[in-house]
Image 1 (cartoon, rainbow, N blue to C red):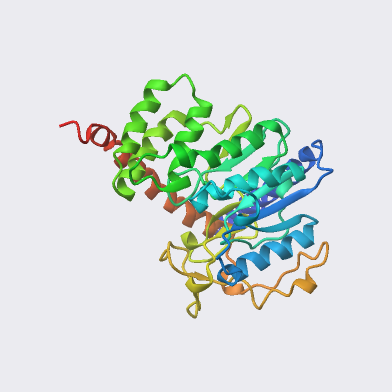
Image 2 (image 1 turned 90 degrees about the horizontal axis):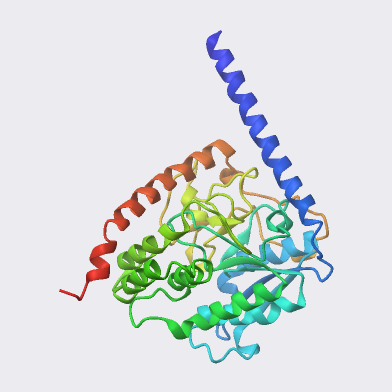
Length: 354
């Protein structure tokens, strides 16, 4: 009898959580209705002149289909077409392009080319807030702020911020800097914490001494101490893990939840693998592989307004509880690694002084 009671309680809790999540999404969209979106929302992907879109085929088609379904603009931009040639680093060039496109729309969701939409029922308006001009999110598999995706409103502040980020290429140290992935942390720290000059300069020294990915993680940990657990910094918001619109696909072996997920990151064509037979465990898998969540090819002619009924590989559709648990286990590993990296900050700052 007690077992039955426990099972019933668990089921009730799960139902309540799902209902609360759905209500939260709905209320966030309703709040966004106060924002002037008359110029529309665009989803922007920026690729180089040499890039073959087929390398991101599933991701790009899923985003284009989603845009058609929800009434957004989809832009696949070549970075050579916007007068951003001063940027020699194509990662920074993307932000220059974004700053030039943003004035044409009410808001732009900039995403990496290998980010795909898995859940077309979710809406971008969920992440728009009247008081916030630019929204970033924390990556889940490490403690970085995601540089490859952000949501910007058409405001002078947002346009200037993104333009300046693109120009940060010319302030990079001659070290292992990680391009925009590394630079975003010191760039935002300078913007958000102008009075924390001493702390930022120590972290800048760590950045200048970086030789590899481990050093880069140590430098990142140095700056993340300034941000603390806060999410809102004036007109900038940095969403917590699991609160953003995208996460890395591999963290759950490609298994996703309709109650949790919106977009997944890491869909490169040459990394696509056939999923194994049977039940797929919700664990972190190799960085260079992913499974197609769809049951067949995406036919853009069928992507009509309101058609959110997509066909999936049911093998990869998981429960909210299983996906949540898998992501939380990964989060513990990341938290422990951050503590480890914090212990290396002093040594990295002092490197070269002895």
